[in-house]
Length: 379
Image (cartoon, rainbow, N blue to C red; front, top):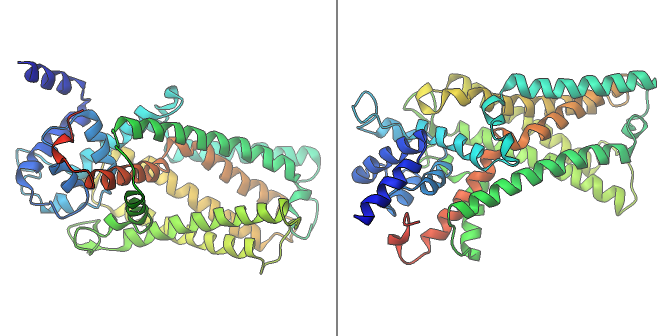
């Protein structure tokens, strides 16, 4: 009787997408046809019941490759209507909203589409352009690429430090709460190494057999994985360029502007190119993707993330090409506006999915090494 009451309480605690996900996972656990497709299905079979924390964990472990939908004999129009990619996408958004910090900002996930993200960036660009115009530095003439003649170094450091610091803090608090919520267990070096490898190689975007994801139909393709690589490593190269420039400035006392052949410029250029190729490819795949492969309501958020990354990289490359021209000040304001708009919306948009997925991969690596599989799902 007590067990029955516990099950009823657990079911009532599930929100609509979570409840639907739990229903589908029970069917999948009985069928197990897709067990070798990705990490979700082996993790699913370690459980007999699916609590809210289990559903959140499995949803973020899902890479939305779409393979299970095309393989499923219970997919629509079957009366069971099993669509794991869609329900997992719905639960993922609920996860981001649940663990958002501050809590009142969680609803921004509902509205963070192309319009909101671009309006945020455009508002910042307008403010920066007006500031330059009022100070008489909007068209100062060629400055040999010296950005600090437009915006002093300390001003830029203060602006971006505040925005970046808030974004990192908001993401970190949400991730810590998520990590605690999914009862992770003890992390070993091996588990951490496996999770890092799986995240950096995007292992589960290769599909269960390494042939890739499904996009428009049931044909497999590795292009989604490749464009994700261009995007991720392009972003990391840009971050490395900023880090090296900071090292040059504060440690080596080498100040911008840097030569085209210098390490910060080379890293930033390569990263910018990656951040053009990746987002363009991902946007195309998103536009043509089968609507059954996810939650259609999240497409504006997905595209906002892609478009903003493209705007950052494109404006950065244009700024580099024309940094010695009279238009450098305006181009700098445009680039900085897109960068700041991205970081302001970063904790409440698609960017967060990579970090939540990394945490889920770490949980997966930990529980694979635990001795008693029957303990899972018992929270």
